[in-house]
Amino acid sequence: MGSEGQAPLGPKYVGLWDFEARTAEELSFRAGDLFHVARKEEEWWWAVHLDGAGRALAEGYVPHNYLAEKETVESEPWFFGRISRSEALHRLQAMGNEQGSFLIRISEKPGADYVLSVRDQQTVRHYKIWWRAGWLHLNEAVSFPGLSELVDHHKVQSLSHGLRLTSPCRKHEPQPLPHCDDWERPREEFTLCRKLGSGYFGEVFEGLWKDKVRVAIKVIARADLLHQHTFQSEIQAMKKLRHKHILALYAVASVGDPVYIVTELMPKGSLLELLRDSDEKALPVSELMDFAAQVAEGMCYLESQNYIHRDLAARNILVGENNICKVGDFGLARLIKACPTTRPSSGWRAATACPAPQSARPPHTS
Ligand code: ADP
Ligand code: MG
Image (cartoon, rainbow, N blue to C red; front, side):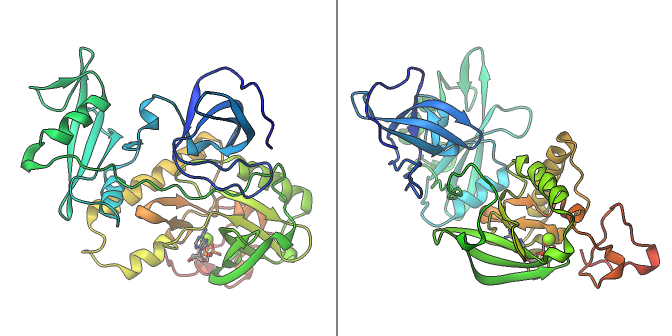
């Protein structure tokens, strides 16, 4: 880290959030700091940190989702990209937002290009925005050259219901795992803190990586796993799968026994538990539809990568902040040696190479 000198040319990028480096290769920065990006390596970009005059201060890795190209709509604090109506609702209803807090998202439906979602007391109002002849419209009467102008206008002029835009919806990005070239990590880097649950594949713990980053750690007895080289190649394939609705695999500690499979931590646990613990009021049909749509998106992605899940069930959908759903445990059925019919199970009923005969299957739990 830390070489001063000439910055590479190219577009400037702006930091969206503060970031604290965890390794010597990473760069610390504040929201609003400027960068040139020298190299894009999947989730980590090698970037040059610039001072106000555009001179290079230092260089190192930064998480790609903490940067946006300067002067693009993506760098605006109120632009949330492609999020669903229900995610917008959850985000705006979260603590820290006030009357008039707002965000702009890309429309999920035809008939609009963007949607302006605004907090109004305990509810959220949604306004369609569309392009016509090079101008943006929020209604037929007024038009704007761009989203920033639309936002500025409605900070002064009220929308319907006397609603005026105040501050952007609070944005928060989960901390990524520290940058490292090797996804096979020594077990000593992980601390198991609290047991979250257990299932057919082993136990799951909330844990810490290098005492800093909160993660979920699945602990599996080595005797239950396939040969090391088959295991490694399957994990390689799983690690490449990256999507908003797919649980991210971060690392494995597969030397020794037991083996750790480290993924992102999902604060609300499994969808099965959430469904069982909630009534119609807490989870209305619209919310259930949104869960289904998110799972379908994740599964479409897996299919596009020629990847078969083999164990899709509500207990393998994990739920995070703002009710974001992620498909988990994909491919795991292939890593495990034993045939499920020989073991007591918590509802294992995947279409695998080793299907259970109908009579031997456990009752459906999810
Ligand atoms: P099963 O799928 O049979 O329920 P798992 O071993 O996959 O068993 O998970 C056991 C439990 O651990 C889940 O039901 C869930 O409550 C919790 N869990 C699993 N993965 C995560 C995760 N990434 N984040 C938070 N909780 C998790
Ligand atoms: Mg599971």
